[in-house]
Amino acid sequence: MDAPTTASADNGTSGGGSDGWFTPRTQPDATPDNESEAAEGSRLAAMRPMGRTTADTDKDQPTQYVPQSAPPAEPEPAAAAPRPSGARPSPAEPSPPESPAAAELRVPTQRSTAPAAQIQEPAARAGAETASPDAVLIRRTMAEVAPIADKVTSYFYALLFVRHPDLRSLFPAAMDTQRDRLLKALLTAAEHIDNTEVLVAYLQNLGRGHRKYGTRAEHYPAVGECLIGALSRYASGIWDAETEAAWVRAYTTISQVMIDAAAADELRAPAWWYAEIVAHDLRTPDVAVVTVRPDQPYPFLAGQYTSVETPWWPRIWRHYSFASAPRSDGLLTFHVKAVPAGWVSNALVHRARPGDIIRLGPPTGSMTVDHTTDSGLLCLGGGTGIAPIKALVEDVAEHGERRTVEVFYGARTDHDLYDIDTMLRLQQSHPWLSVRAVIDQQAHLQLPDAIREYGPWNEFDAYLSGPPGMIRSGVDALRNIGIPSERIRHDSVEELVTTGD
Image 1 (cartoon, rainbow, N blue to C red):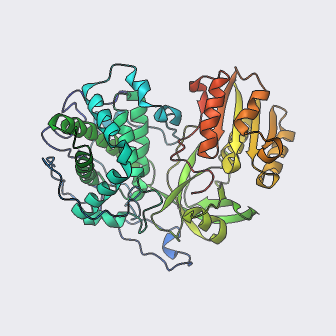
Image 2 (cartoon, rainbow, N blue to C red):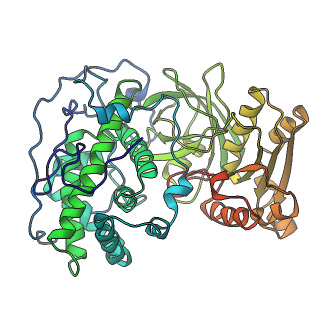
Image 3 (cartoon, helix red, strand yellow):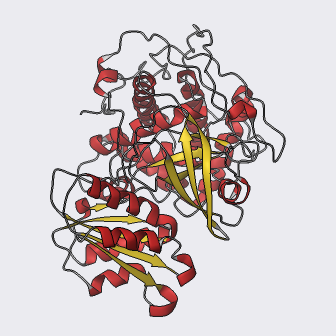
């Protein structure tokens, strides 16, 4: 699969040349209906499963944006925000003939993204090869603004809400918890502009995921306009016409890949699913196992995760892994740990009850089993990170395989091994499975270090899930004992929250 490059102003994926701004090729979707927000503590009747209504399609195309020569006076910084969210999207309507680029981006319903480890590798890896002129300018800009990223982010959202106040309603009322995710996503994509395979997979995933926020094609020019405005202000020492043109080309490419992926996904899947909580098992004072029934079939793969929105905090989404392989009854299970100031996690652990309705985004994630090989699985799960590990074990069992699976279940105390009984029962049922608990306070040994005492792991694929710090140290430990990076699977430590908010 080829991705557009930035070698020219118009390479067949953009809507215009370098002297104009991007105009999406696709027709805008209908304007989302406003959803009423229920009073604090009540269950949203509006969030219960019901038929989705069809809205009229807005036929107006957005106008092109020509980058300004100088940014406007700085507005009062708004509280920074996550990605657009909230209003209920309309169902898929008949689409115009799909372009070759859109057809090329078509992916199966049960999908996985490129390994997040690839996304997160330093730019130095890409720099080892000859970088394109645009990539050099883009990375130079990012290096310039990195020390003041918080200011860039605040100014970006301030510009967005001042110039386009109609977009403010798509964001949560309080936006401090994930203030810079949108900007970071855009900058990450721009940084990998020369890495075709990783870039396309990353952007396709973003484009599909943004559907649940109510994001439409005509929103992208506004975001790009404000991104250029924020960068030009805080990288003024190196900003010139050539740099601006490079960012326009990069954002044009980024936008079109995301829009095409969203348009293709709209033909096969809803933007989000309603799901009713059918069981709520409080395993510890701060960990709950939550089981839900989606309002329509929900295809996913063991090891993937999804985003969750509760009725108590509209437009705030958090990521949780599926704690089981796909089930014949269609039920989904999540392990949720309440963390301090965690809005969604505390709501799911302490307020949610059977009968409450939540919303689910599309499944995503690449931490899935390759059933075309017979390699062993080395699984490291810390805290509620044991949830997707349990799903992987079930997946191997359901495929009838007898490949070796070694699970290291890490916790700070015995109390934190809330699911150890389930894992030990699986071990009793499957002779190819071995489960070892690693308790920090007893052994004074961190989970990644424990694997050095066992092995060798030369013929194993490694899977990691848990707190970001554990994933980072675990990846280092695995590499140090000789497991190559391409055989280490985990999901983005910035995106995936397996331990709370």
